[in-house]
Length: 86
Image 1 (cartoon, rainbow, N blue to C red):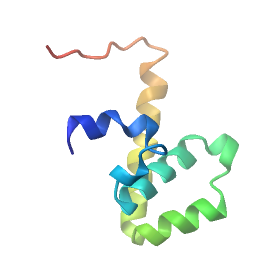
Image 2: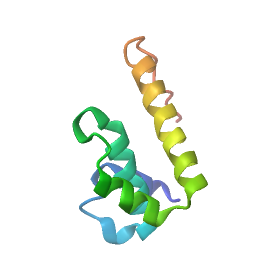
Image 3: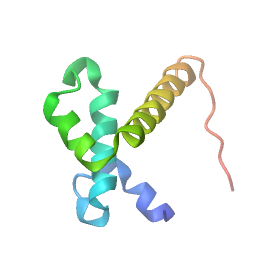
Image 4: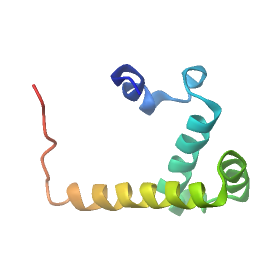
């Protein structure tokens, strides 16, 4: 994936035409899982995600999302620096 496309991930809703249906489903599921205290992983979101991914792929995606969320929840309070490449 190009750096330009990665840079658009935070605004993917606004430029969803630049992402495949499966990429949009993954991004929507990532938001749903990340905000689970608010979304409660709704049935509608689960149905949409499971329609875009097979069972094992959805498990793998959810584990990757959970791992990134865990890393962020550790990195922020411990002030882990973001590496900058020149």
